[in-house]
Image (cartoon, rainbow, N blue to C red; front, side, top):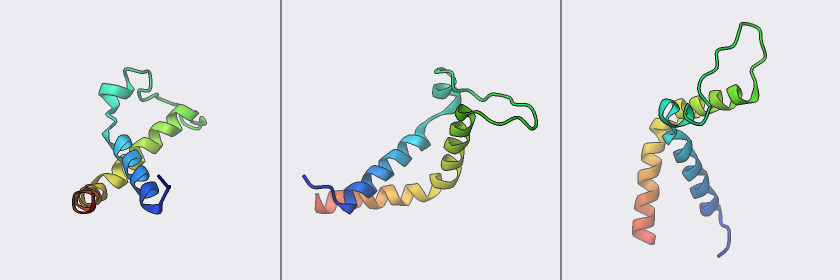
Length: 80
């Protein structure tokens, strides 16, 4: 099975779906990745930067991801 451009796009879509599904209070807080309160002027740590990245991805990608998922599912159903 060769790696094609479609396979890479499908993997990226699956990763975006996984990030959008993560719920901060139900999942991330239980594993110790809740929101940390930082003081003004302090450098954010790696954990805070990753949480901000997850929130940003969730905000920007949530609504465009719905039609993209529908298109991928339809493509899979039609072409197998």
